[in-house]
Image (cartoon, rainbow, N blue to C red; front, side, top):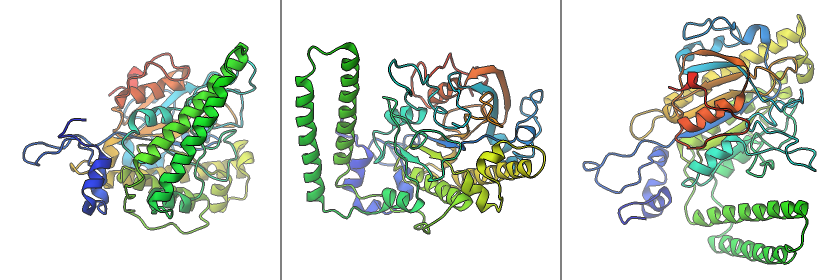
Length: 429
């Protein structure tokens, strides 16, 4: 590192008086010089993915396929987003070609994986797009990514959150707003010396395990060699996490810009608080990659709807369809509120958090358990995507084309993601 450069961790260590100012956590500059001599570098890019499990009401959420462009008519389900119409885009026509589980609305949503791609395994996944973001943009933040979840998983399918690591293994998510708050902002209870000793002990254990594993490496079959390679990758992942923990041992966590959540929040109240925590995490630059696997059943209950999430997904005219439509509107209202907060949160250069965040909302299920035309809403300025549009792509366009376009728009130079076949030129700003 050059003498006149420093990263955020060095900045915090050297200027403790600034730690308590959340607005400074988003500064993002890299060069130490007087304000008169050097302007700050643009704020960092962020990405947020919001998965809803079971799909939406086809008749009242999706815009008419023939009504495209910027002048399309907002549907009933999207109407709560009207004040942000120029700042989000609806994409139709996308699907994950290998998905064939009509109750799994999020398992392959961000990966586009072929579940049968690895011989001998009943299910194989691959890295999710949020973890690609974390790999490229998470080096300078305390948490490479923060996956959020809910104890209510109806409609989502296997997985511990929306996130899957580079080995296709599920990444655990935090399903309680109180725990998320303390993870992000509460000081560590264990003294520094004990935390250092714990990391050293974990490294010692890893070294011993790795030595034993290498002893059996010779003479293995290809299948066993593949399994051992996957095991070694798991060891390397743990080593990476330990290194990151070590880097941040003596750096105090950011001061929380919001108060501690009330315990026991469920449904709509849980989602709204998780959205507040997402903004707080991005505002303090605690992470730049977040996902949220949202609740379904508890959302309906919090809306005083007495139909199960699964039965609502099998809606027909009447009570079930009305419940499905009410759920859709609640999601749109909460999404509009999240966009409000992102726009209202200012960066050090005067721009908004919204200007530097790529936001995606949707599901792998469209409606009534159909797996084509995944509902997809994109918002934010973080990926340089075209906003204010209704875009209809050819049927069964890989959804991963959208994720690839987003990644490249964020400056992440990957050539493909999942089953992508290319970028979506209609989306590029």
